[in-house]
Amino acid sequence: MKRSVAVLGAVLSTAMLAGCWDREYLKDLNLAYSVGFDLTKDKKIKETVELIIPPESEQSGTKNEIHIAVGPTTRGSSNELRARVRGNMRVLKNGVQVIGKDLALNGLKPPMDVNFRDPDNPSSNVRLIITDGEASDIIGQKEVGELKIGEFLVQKIESLEKMSLFYPPETMDTVFKALKDPGQDFALPYIGLEGKEIVAKGVALFHDQYFTGELNTEDSIMLVLLKGRSGDNARFTKKIDDGPLRGNISFNVGKKKVKRTFKVMVGKNGEVHVQLNIKLKGLIEEYTGSHPLTEESIVRVNQELSDILTRQARDVVRSLQKANCDIFGVGRELIAYHNRIWRQKDWSKEYQEVQFHTNVQVSIINTGIIQ
Picture 1 (spheres, rainbow, N blue to C red):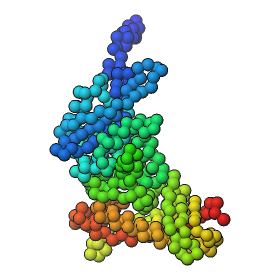
Picture 2 (spheres, one colour; picture 1 turned 180 degrees about the vertical axis):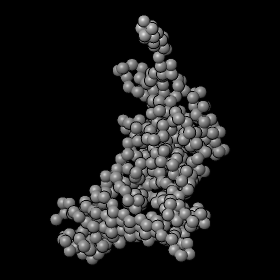
Picture 3 (cartoon, helix red, strand yellow; picture 1 turned 90 degrees about the horizontal axis):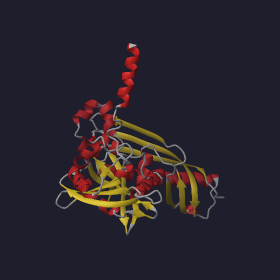
Picture 4 (cartoon, rainbow, N blue to C red; picture 1 turned 60 degrees about the vertical axis):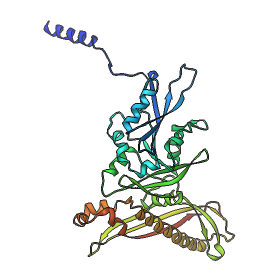
């Protein structure tokens, strides 16, 4: 009898529960699909948000609205936005955040702090992008073709990752980890406007939280390869000046795995040397020369391309050092394996004195349709 009474009490108690007291209906929400941040002339934060408005009926589709607000801080501008839009604004579907160049030059930590700390803000799949103008100009495009601007930006970044302009994907999570690591810097996708067209400009280089330099699109691909990575494709077009082989050659080195040697060494006087070599296997996709690509001539093409890409790789490394961007994590290696030397160095100044020894070896393994 006591057991029956206990069971009955449990059933009645369950029936009296109120259910999901904190639930929200999608029809009552305005979902932010893309967000942009800029620094105004008077050092305030301008926030631009693309809101997806739920359809009014099953037959109608969603719409997007662009809203802009200015505040003394990121949270302040967000509060101003929420006061202006109808309904509640949530960022749980946010896929991309665009940062204006002026704001990136002044540092990412202050404006991004609330985004990193707020548990309501997604971070693991949110792409961070730098624009050479204002983020409001990018998101203000509203639509590109049939795509809403947030969808377009996510798809564009994913396609450029497959082309090895930047890889692996950088998200708010990965950037936060890099900001907390004194021995590792990072780079972010860099875009801009040409007329009304959104174009890839390469990558924006960072030291600590500050935007310090940039690489163009082709050098961005080389940077990805020097990291030992690649997307689905990694294409170059180079000019061959070797006598009868003279002509332009387009080749893809992204189909095969990159073989990489990366070794950090410390000399007797504390100088840091880095051996950075990569071996690439390429497929020729186009060749404008008149000389046939025989087995003998392929050997000469391999040497020519190896020399060309080695010079490019060394230029990329010099650009990284000029921007003080330790994207390879040389400092991380010193922390792990040469900690005494690391503690003696002012890495923000001495990274630029690291001696890199960089070489690229290219082997053409397929000439495609070329006879």
